[in-house]
Structure formats: C-alpha cells, structure tokens
Image: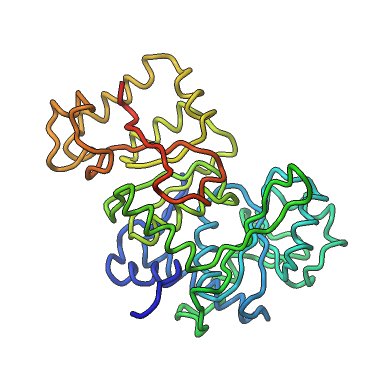
Length: 340
C-alpha cells in the first residue's frame, strides 16, 4: 500500500478481517462490518448508476441515525462529496447550503421532508435525485433509499478515489455571515483519525457512542476514527439529549468512549446522586469485561488506581466544542466517567 486508505476502503478491509463484528449501529439497528460494507457498496453503485459521477455533491438532511455511516462510507467509495446539512436550519438556510455546494442529489429523512418541500421548487437538485428514508411509505417525488440499496450491486465501485479528493463539505454556522463550506479531504480525515487514535489510545477493541450531530465535524471525526481502527461505532439517535438515558446506554452497552460538550456534562452532573452511583455499580460488577482483562475489582472501585486514560477498556470522556474536529487529537481533554 503506497497511500492512505479512505474510510470506504478501511471499512472494506475490516469487512474482510472481522466480518461478523458489529461496526455501526444506533439504538434500533446494527450492522456488522460485512453488512456495513455491502450496504455502502450497494448505495454507492446505485448513486453512480442513477447518473451521479465522481466529484458530485450529495446533501444530507437527517437526524442522527446509522444511515449517516452508510452514506459517508458510500460517498467515500464512489468519490462523491457529502454535504451534511444541519437539521436545525430553516428552509432558506437549507436552500443556501444546497445551492452554494452545488448539490446534485439530496438525501432526506422522513421527519424532515416538509422542510425540503417548502423550498424544493428553488433547489438546483434534479427532480429524480431526491432520496427519502426513515418510513415505509416513500412520498411522491422521492426515490426510496432502501430500494436504491436493493438495486445497487454489492461489488466495490470501480472508481479511483485519490487521498487528495474532497470527501465532505462541512459548513460553518454562519454566525458572522453566510455559512462557508470547509473542504475535508480523504487524506486529512484519515490522518486526523490516525493521529487521534495514537494520541488517545484507541484500538479495535473500543466501542464509541456518538451523541453530537453527524452533520457536525466532531461526530464525523470520531466516526472516521472508529471505522478506521476497526472499532464499533454507536449512534445516539434520540432527537434530544437525555442525560440519564445516555449514562444508561454507556453502562449497559459496555461502551468505552464518548465525546460531549460542556452542557451535556452539566446536565449529567445535575442528575440525582443515586443515578450515576447505580450505573457505576453495574459497571463494577462487570469490571473484568469493562475495564480490561488486567483490571482487578479493587482497581475498578478506585478508578484513580488505573494507570493512564488510554488503558485497554474503561470509559473515556472527551470534552470540547462541536468544532473540535479541526484540531489534532492532542488538544483533547479526557477523563474517566467515574473519576471523583
């Protein structure tokens, strides 16, 4: 190998090495690496077969769900450029990003179709390139996401994707003017993932929970890292943050990492003291599995005795803003969830 793999190629490799390992999931659906890779291949081939070509931009408007990971990997395989659109934006704001990016297709989740319909007549997207997912019934004027995947071939797309090619346009919030599309190349994304994995001690044994929106750089950063290293990536797909539920998911699913903003941690700290204590007790009862094979129960009761935040297993927390994906892994702030 004489060049960096993109995420699409990395998922293909892990589908060969650990085909039955869970690679991507949300609270409702899970995919092994084999399934993740095949669905991404099918989607990539279907999009190319529908008339899209390498370098074309695809806008995505959706809440957090595992479909984001299928789409990101499919665009990497096909040489297409993902344009994540913030689901909090209003119609005119969505229109600006779709127009500015020159999107030739739009994938939209069922809950957000009405927002697209408000502006559809003003969008540059060809009528046949509106793709819908998230409900059994596909609205008139849209193509079914699942039917596209069923139609596409499972083979790897025959597209030469260079590390320097653009993979995503990540739009800024536009607080001082119009949003600006920051170009994320395959090489930059892979290098950031590798640097962070080395700096923070990630391995294929990790299982991360992505809470922040998949349309933001933070979750794309860590999704790339987890997929690149062959770890498991879980998407928190509730529309709003539930501090107690997140803690329970972290405990019950034996997750080893999550990244949150300060407001999330403040909400967690505001929970009744009995809640985190009960969850910590559940984890301690399973200490050998959760904290690594070499961790004793006495160490589990005293997290400060466990050396290093990047020790195998354990639960690590990253704290920062939604723009942290632009920084190197060394800028991360981490702590164990149960450290006093």
